[in-house]
Image 1 (tube, rainbow, N blue to C red):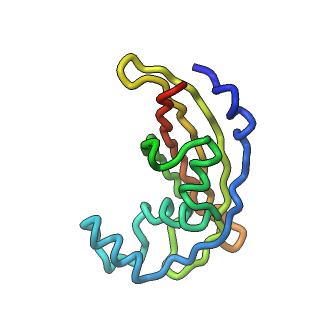
Image 2: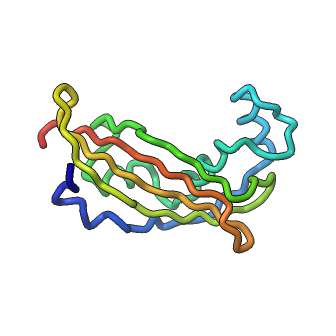
Image 3: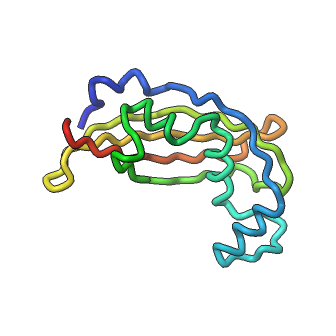
Length: 144
């Protein structure tokens, strides 16, 4: 279980970053879809991840290309963990930053070879670190 040779240099690579404004209508729709209280003043925590991937400054296709993959290769969402340091706020504009934190090659008896890429997304507002989302993407490697 080591880093695959061509991708070790991606660990630490920063995303371009950007901003995301948490619109009240989106918070309402998200809460309603998740069977949460859409009238709650505090947005649902899943919006931290949504804000992160909306403001990270990349498309999924661009991110996949960093690892010589495309959507046609069948990448899969792996782990997810959100840590909230402060509650999300309706209408707040978050500065989004992030980076690749790990690349690990694994081989399964049935699944074959895959690369598991871990990345983090951070949300900041007015200088405060509000949230960190850790995620992983699994890239099947059919010819590896």
